[in-house]
Image 1 (spheres, rainbow, N blue to C red):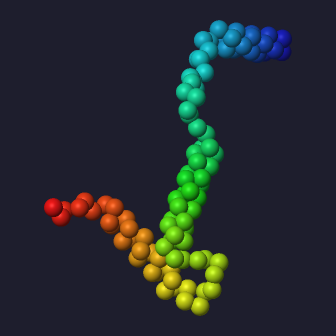
Image 2: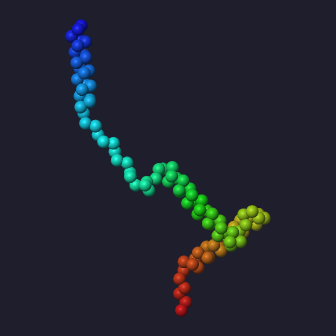
Length: 100
């Protein structure tokens, strides 16, 4: 009985010694770049960008006659007319003047 206890203690002691002498791997290097963003920051930036794009689009529509808070009796037609004007503006800016 004493031999089994002694043998088990020796095995435990040798296992602990072996574990203590194993080299420890260094922790993986994390990005030191201050521009590195967390996923939460990336989503927040994407939402902010999308909101700015929508606000710019609404501003263009309002500039071309659409009033979202006004009378809505001609709603789809008013919006479509404003969209056509915006598209015509963008096409006019994108197309170079080819007349001499």
